[in-house]
Length: 158
Image 1 (tube, rainbow, N blue to C red):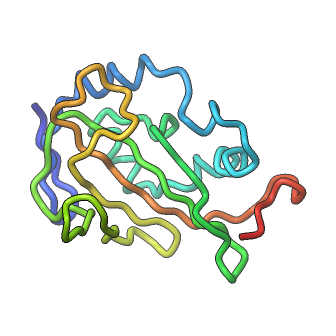
Image 2: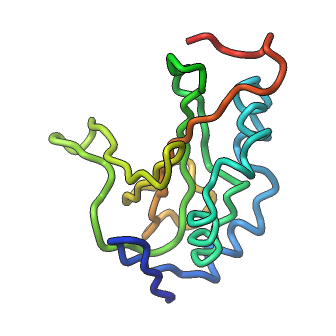
């Protein structure tokens, strides 16, 4: 196990299992979808994740190009689109869980801003995970503001 400190969190990762899992994945969910929203995300994916997060993912064995899920939530009034998505790593974390709930099922997310266009949060979950064993997974949630730069005919207006 490897211990990684990220801001006020202590992340314990099984680097070898996490790295091997991402190596076995051919595409992230955006490539498999091929809708306009995902094509726009792919066009920006290398710029979406701040260097601080790319470094963290390298330490965790996570390939940011192979997200388990990504979706466009809405078009903001300033014209940028708000995307959300998640990835996973194997093991655990100590610190604030980003999922805030009162009933254990429904809730909201309390994310950590990395910059004006990107925020991240961590929680224990295994939604759509690529891992063979979904026990002891940390789900890394992210939100990003992305401009629309591909064919305007494909752009969602809401």
